[in-house]
Image 1 (cartoon, rainbow, N blue to C red):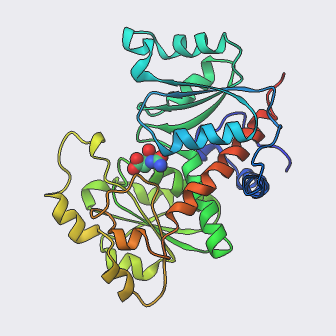
Image 2: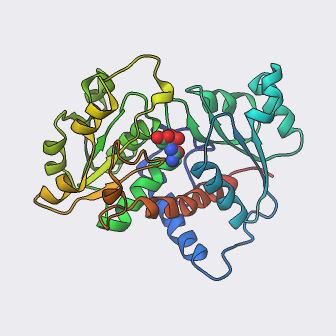
Image 3: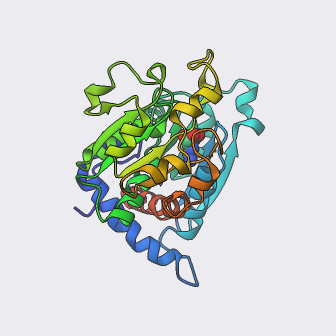
Length: 309
Ligand code: NCD
């Protein structure tokens, strides 16, 4: 396959295994590019990309912007805190006004699940979902799988446990889709109240005992509790959460094998993961960040090649 089966990256749910292979192969090339002394290619000199962030972000926004600049695209940035959205403008109006300035692609983070899907039906630009509420975060899942592939050779057949707030995490859902698509075995682990009732229908197993989950897995992806998405408490206290679901060095060293530890960031040190684990050789957290740029370059490059200009 030489081109993606989709015109937008709205979620992993819409991808085929061959799309993921193509994105990874393209990212391999860009990873080599960003390690050169001159980290830039002229590929997208004629493309303009708008980064629209209606929700807070550090890593993802910087990573997209860097990826776009490394491809020589023109980039404009917008965050809702300083925009007319606060004056009551609709999402479609905001985006159409931006597109009137001849923008080819929109990278959007939005608090509402499905915002990117909605937009893709109403505006004439390629849409990349950079996180839509509790729904999907496809580039994060791609960079996570890419980082597993880099460390363990392949994703197929590997055992991955996703630990934490599965219910409110778009990283969890996109990872489940991506890992299953590539033939990995997936378990989720966390307080019962933070695990959606019918999660098994996605082909994953539930394990509420962290030690058992860790003894089973090759890779543990430790997620942050999404406090900003909760109106009520889902567990008695942060201290108790950490006691039951926090990963520390003592637990890591007690396992009968060396597992790989991941985290999408931002980390709450001392809550879901202790500093000594986050900073250990078993953690690939900074590799994930580095791979994020190559993965986003690949996604943008492949989508741009489908735009009719
Ligand atoms: C994640 C997100 O925003 O969904 N962060 C990220 O993009 N690296 C995870 C989180 O906020 O916990």
